[in-house]
Image (cartoon, rainbow, N blue to C red; front, side):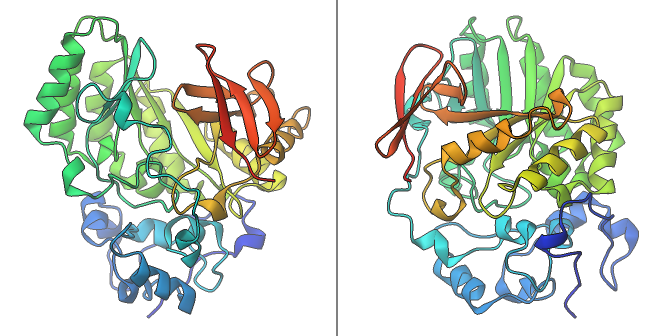
Length: 379
């Protein structure tokens, strides 16, 4: 029987309810992150147990099967409206035929491969790196920046390849800040993640370790007391997660963030501005204020990248600037995230003096090193 979800997209401004297991699933199983990973949704038939997929969604699942498979945790599926294809949770993870109509989209818009001194290490800045330690996530977001690598065997990191990357970090004394990302580092077992953190902490010039993970949002049961007890032995550890909509701010997610905070791990949030998900001023304000209530700092909101299959998600930069300008004076200052554009030359704040404005169909910005970047931004 199809499981019924919460309110539709028109009523999604408030913090969501707790998730609950479907009939026949024990609460202990539902809250076991291993059970959630083993029972992820991967087929149209499995999806029908949670929502009533439209013919367009079913067609997209088949059409996109070889390009970017879909994977959804039961927990996140329980937040979807089963009857509304415009549900902001559903739009993020269920395939859409719109993904096939994006001639301008690029596989690697940030040119990450060119910035990789060794496999899955991305160096854009002199003193910090993004270390893609795996290519697996709890679920696959339809707008994923690294959809070229997520779930693809060629991007998987064997232990030998992790060792090569760690050796490169040890030989590069300028690197003081290491972001573990992927994929998602929290998909690792506690033991494998502990091994990686020990190796990094043995490198004297690595001062800061950051975790980039969406699991507090998509699979909050992964954030166990045991995980947090292990992480706090390797401070300073910082963590950024990725809530996009108020409906994701469930009590389960709040509990996961609270565990991290009590372990002394600052938690920030990095959203992506997505059409039909959070480009409404009321939705964005509710998201940011809900995060603050959870003691999670709204840190960045990214302009959606010129990424293949995502034209239906992209918002004009001027509209994003207007949205965040409208939040000033209407909510707590630290509840307003910084709106940024990621480029092959690093992140650029979309405000003065970095944002230069529109030139034809491009938006012109200046990166940290003085490089001028022209981002396609059709009217």
